[in-house]
Image (cartoon, rainbow, N blue to C red; front, side):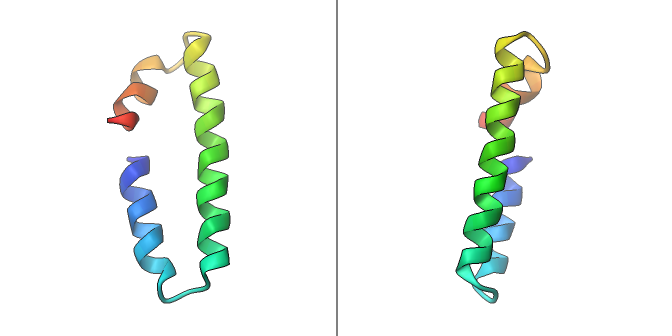
Length: 53
């Protein structure tokens, strides 16, 4: 799901400012780090692995 979301943001950013998209992608990456940390602790492990594919 997150991969498709990022692709949409990238396409949409071409009409908007690039700084705005980079900021959105950075925020998305931050949330991914939190999810991966949860996966290490055994929470939502299947969801995080499915999104990486």
